[in-house]
Length: 263
Image (cartoon, one colour):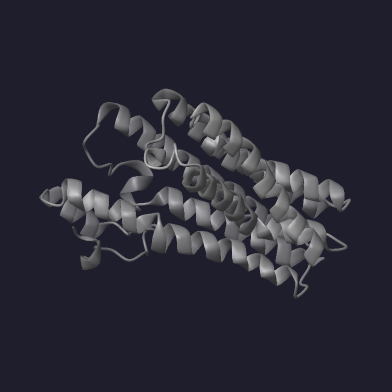
């Protein structure tokens, strides 16, 4: 069981090392994000085949991960194809060790986030729990939610560059895409547990916990809130937006802003 879990880690890191070599040699950023998205699909597919996990729940979880990968991969590829370069790598692109460390961490992240799917495919249940249908519908809804949020912001920035978005889903949450992202993976964990309440499968909670910590505490919300306050902090309309709009969870989430996010 544990061996297969770490085989999944090896697959995820192996894929990223392969594309790291390509990216480092040709100093090309185009495939960085698309590799991240596609690693979820490839890792899930290989683990499913290796373990002969072709039950209804496994197929459903694999399909959901595939849809997620296509959504994110397409969006990121379009974005980087237009810019041709990712500014995140300006200080590491020419460093073998720094650039390589980023790719290793990316593979490790895929492994952690995708843990609910990986563990279930290694340790599947014997039957399909009908209650899972609710979680499947919710997972698809959250996937659609974050897709709409990304599209709304993308279209907004094309004609309103230099202005903060407060329309559509961004009117009910300052980070609706993050809400949809975290909720999607939480639903996958729910599907896994509903169909095999085994102690080892509970480890799948690592995925939602990791992505929640990353998005809400480390590299997601805190950074964007700081940038937003730096750009628009003197605009009364932006302060009003902060005070009236939940940070992440639509309608009922915490409003306002933290003093520590201020520059």
